[in-house]
Image (cartoon, rainbow, N blue to C red; front, top):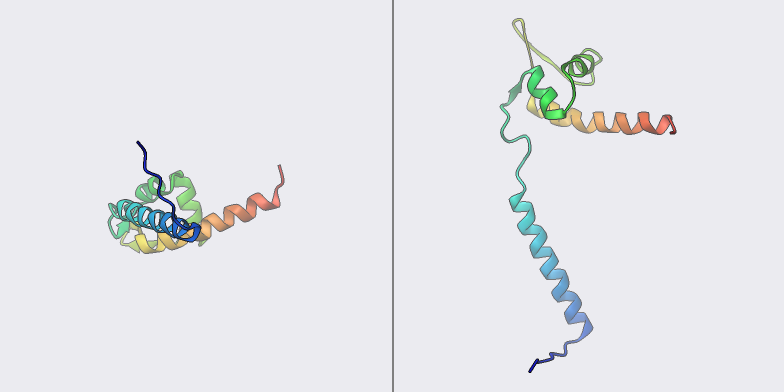
Length: 103
């Protein structure tokens, strides 16, 4: 035989909200930082791999100032913090470019 429990609607709503909140917190703990495995200074190929673009795009963005490059002797490196910061700017730039060219 099944037992039926009657509870007020507000209590049910609070119970659902608390369960969802708890699950979201557990999920956030499981999601790792996608940049965590990368070193603090990145090569062009590492940045290209991280952003899913070609090395030519990285060179283009570095030469136009969209991505800040560091020159260490004859080697070019990118700060992971700068790449993460530029990622938001690049996404905004791409959204703006898409908005200017309707399909």
